[in-house]
Length: 195
Image 1 (spheres, rainbow, N blue to C red):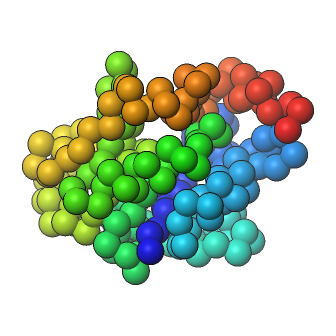
Image 2 (image 1 turned 180 degrees about the vertical axis):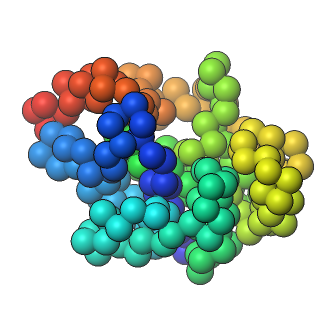
């Protein structure tokens, strides 16, 4: 059994502060598309968000246990409330997630603290698997005011998912694309106009 947590706590300043997950995408919304995909990956899906805009989705919405700690705080929250030893964390604004790849990440994470994709641009911490063993180190980092997930990795047993493994699931090179600006959103809409 596994859990997937959609980390939806960002404020989306560059998109006018609106909840990215509720933005329309083709015939659905970002968050609805993710929920549909994620239930094909895991038995339990939850959303970590302080925004009550997601309550109507029928998926548990959990507020950050440590407000202001960014994505690390969101993942800490997910690990704390999950009924499983492992949580796959994904950002709410990634429209091109693939079921097979996410399953691959979960399998890769079964014997380590973190299974994390690494591209030529660096690590993708919001499409990674985190185990319960991360909690003490996360709390240490949060207590010190260090909220960057990259700063956490040296203290944990990690499994890098490299470019070759990623390419097998990412023919278009869009797997980790996320929406941060109006231009990003327009581009994503164009990709989904017939879906």
